[in-house]
Length: 316
Length: 263
Image 1 (cartoon, rainbow over the protein chains, first blue to last red):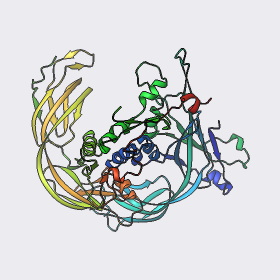
Image 2 (tube, helix red, strand yellow):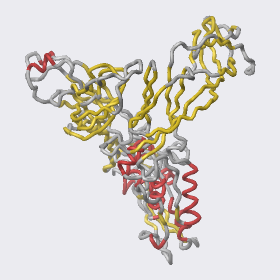
Image 3 (spheres, chains in turn yellow, cyan):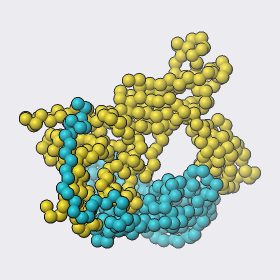
Image 4 (cartoon, rainbow over the protein chains, first blue to last red):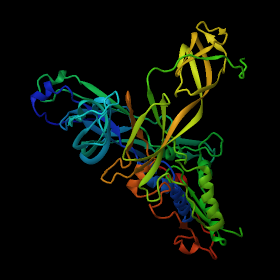
């Protein structure tokens, strides 16, 4: 599987190769919203509603956890990340250390933003990305001895740096846009499948994995030379940046449900799938409807698919 | 083993020479995550009444547009005159109080350690463990000297020392409101203070998930801001409810390997 990606652009000029020693690229993982990781009161109520309606509450978790896609027998984990660059024409190479991972092509984007820039007795703060917009002072400019600097220092963006005309302690508010590239790392895993020999009760598990070692790191390397330049083959990457991917908690939680040993016999078998099934409707239905019976739903704790349903009248 | 109650003499020498101010934000008192008790309360409502109106207290205001943060300022000397200001915030206070701190300091084969806050009154100091010298042997518990926030012993040792002392703190309440023209980072705010000799900034942490919740238009319970968590789970409103009369026992049996397996 291809686990590297080279993104190439034309060099603006030969001068770029020699003069632009301050080129840089930086990686940042796009964090999934906390709403996909932590439960709220609303989430609990919604999951109870799912269970009452004969759906698995797990479906709701998976709907919120967009990083995890189960397609047939393949579990795909999608992790978006940004590549912030000093120049949108910068050549960079991405690699991932996970052999099950592949990196998709980058999408150039411009996004509106606003944020504070805090100067603590300094004259430059690197905001770490290409920012285009306005800066506004939010408080006086203080010297290190606590006195107010007058007249106030001037300020501007120089590359990715917010720069003051002299050292000060202050806060600037930035309003504008940031520009960069967005890629997706996809880690593909097989859905664990279990075959059972009914005569011997021997089980064969395949496609299994452990979430304990599930990790990935991405490296970006950028150069100060371009493919069409003489001596390109000798080009040595100037430097690099690494990003350890944070696998979202909801992904780990859902994947952990793919390997179950609920009956505690040390084996993962079909009984575990049955025992591991959540029977939420069996209790909730009885209580809220009062009469009739209960609907029992068994579902695959890994994929969320319903394996079996049964209506059980109260008089049984 | 050391007698934990044994108090070793603690000698106060001089005081700090330079003025300073330590700023801190007090932790929010409301838990930021759903607790087991919250879940029990919700389920209890559903079990007993079929519905739940439970919600947990949010740090944000009901309209989701503001919150209050508590800022603690520890001046040294206590007579320090300082001014305060806020970026995107309204300040009230200060309320000056004397609080007691207990700190555990580790001497790791060194002869100095630092307290976190300025000392108003020393109450007690004691070694919590055996004290070891650089050779690894147990040695007698040395006398600890205080010089401002610095503690020292006359030789390099390894050991744990507990100090109980009082410190003066000025308590401010800062009300932070939504930045109306913000595209993101809606609730960023900064507390600052300056005095003859220095300036300090404190970046205020908004309540957990405040930014995301505002962007999604919900409160800390996941309910629409200004709305309600009320979800009525009654049979009449449940379009997918299981049959209530005379259901036949119907079982669908699927073979896991055949119907869901690879083969």
